[in-house]
Length: 225
Image: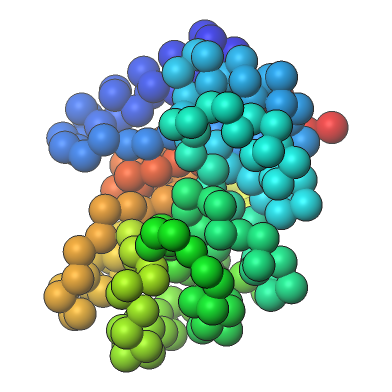
């Protein structure tokens, strides 16, 4: 695992230098089906950000690893409305895909502002959640009018690349999401710092297209059982 993590960081550095990219790219280790002993080992190797897809799997891990005070838990899966109440202890919710979810989260009693990303369905695949690209401006218009700035820290956008071996299609999806990321900031005079896109098979393309956060699971921990 140590060698794999080092190789990923080397890839990040190499690609960033190639494209003259000044921002740091954060690595989130996706721990779906990964046991707590392995997560603890990854933590000892220097990882601090971990992503979970399912609330019912994440909560027990978070409790068992609560002694790791500087660990950051990211929820990256499809968030169901009936699971929202269990989300308040995450460092970041990356998969906000509807105003209904935001309204439910806003009703939680939280000690500090919640970091969130708005998920974009850049591939337009019906099986995926996320705001469609043509609706993202109206979504942010409604979000800003909600006056939730004391509750949420909207850090940027997240997307999942299309399920295909066609790397040109993957690149197009990432390129379009980066354009939305830039346009929203300019249009609404807001500042983002996180563009989460890229996974084990396409993180190189994502970084080339401006990703500031990649979500890697199988490349670090092996194929899921």
